[in-house]
Image (cartoon, rainbow, N blue to C red; front, side):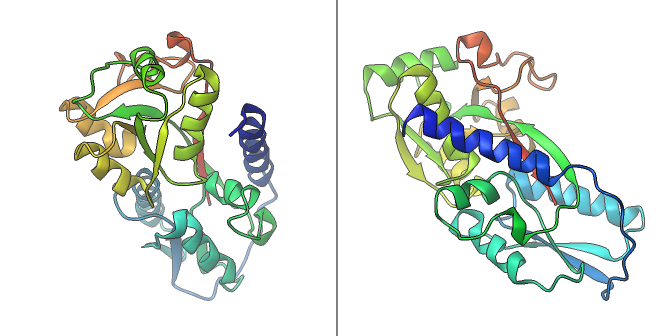
Length: 255
């Protein structure tokens, strides 16, 4: 994939997220249900699932009315849940946990609807992305990983969800470093994490919500992080910019 196309999709995604979650006047509404379904379009245990379960638990403890129940609906790289949310009645009883994949899937032709199909409620988090690796790889940072990839073009195995941030993240790295990786598609974070831990793939995008314990126990390596400054939870992990890769990027999640 050419650099211009990759960047165009990511820029379009960022602009769409910002526009969708711009503050709007609050609207009072009578919601005809005691429990609202929050569709998380990924399997249990991934970063998106973890964050939205924390959100739902906190909201419910603070008296959310209606109460919020998380429903995992993985499949089709997040699009199965997106399609289900799109079909739901517009009565406030169905919420949708989204990130950039809701935009990139349309831009890459995987679904035929856009943000116009949903009503934005709130922006919740921006999660930095980490270049994760299984512990047996012979490199310990992104600089060494890039050198390794250049020594065997198209052979270094990375896993991601086709058309999602985990996929585009490594396309950006390829563009920025002049490398060529071999991409393996997984349906979600949990499957990708399993592949990393099982050493089926060498590298993949991970995040602190789902991978921090594995980093701390040396079951996974963290080669670099996509923030401007080092993250306080993993201060020994250098940013991509520190390692000569000019990428600052994160996953935006909202409802």
